Image 1 (tube, rainbow, N blue to C red):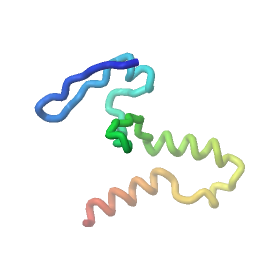
Image 2: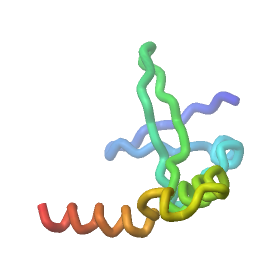
Image 3: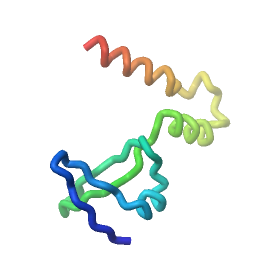
Length: 86
């Protein structure tokens, strides 16, 4: 698929609906943009803490919970505390 889009004066671009559907993007979702060596932009979906925890729990389901490390909730709270105390 190839689509063309126009950047607004504020730097906003629109990702065409067929591409959003193909990538599984949802409204409000974070999107990652990476510049490769050939100055091409690679677009990927961001991962929420909740999505990460679901995946981590599936992968590590045989490992006792006390050995899995911090939960997403604890990480989010720590990040918020660090952000506000700076």
